[in-house]
Length: 197
Image 1 (cartoon, rainbow, N blue to C red):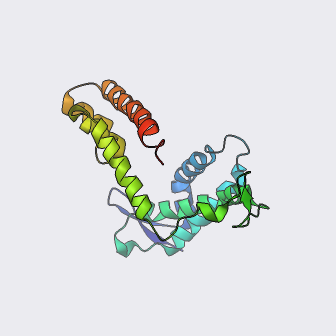
Image 2: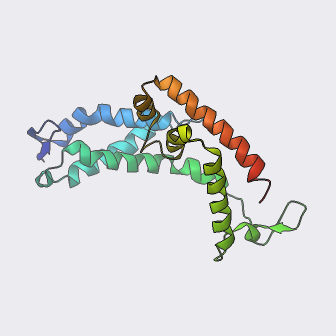
Image 3: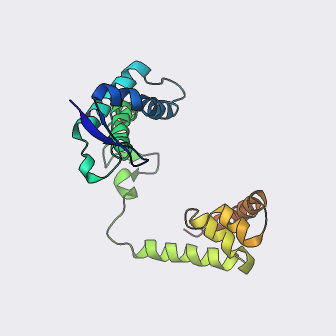
């Protein structure tokens, strides 16, 4: 069986599965190694892992439709991630196996129950506490620390590098300012907020 494969450089090529397998095996191996490196101990047997990913490579080849104008790797990558999930799922699922906890079983010595820890529909106290926390943070952040706070709150929107560029300093100096603010806020929150709730 031949299939038209679109490459990221915009070229098309008619390929058999064996040719696709040979072409994209480095990507399969890379994805496998990246996933397996998360497990310091008890890594997944590479031969088994590779076979699971090769099945996803076959499914990707079989289901790929070049008329969508998506290059093959764009279509293949999520399939490989699904293969990683299938190969590693049992590592996470086995963690809690055999542990059954009742919602009304007591935790510790003070008659606290698990159901007491779960959220209720009444969020008014939560909102008060949250607003109080926000007020404490804003009261303790100086005007020249506002941008460092932006980094702490959302690094994707405003990164340490963005901060460094704005103030014309090195990334390390910017990171030191952010760390300094974080430590300051941790102290303030533990003293002013955690003492209250």
